[in-house]
Image (cartoon, rainbow, N blue to C red):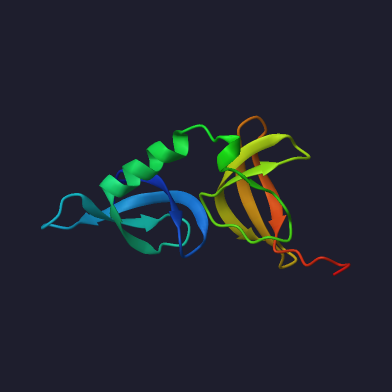
Length: 127
């Protein structure tokens, strides 16, 4: 089978940013196309107009006023903008992961530092 067109998109099934390959299209609506995650093989129906808008929004520079202060005891969502005061950098959350010991982590694309993994939903040991 020949390789088709691929895009990068967040897979809700494996909860990661991964390559998606074209599986097929919807005849009534050419702007909606079926893609399959190359990691977990889960298929999703994607609206290309909405996807392009999300890609443009992700490329926009993050402003400090839009950012939430990073704290390890908070749960975050993909696409959210955060500011890490210890690293003195802002970034967007690109995916969520579970670490080998079962803890929850977020993958953040920082403006200066690049991609970093940070813990989330960590219970406060004193409280």
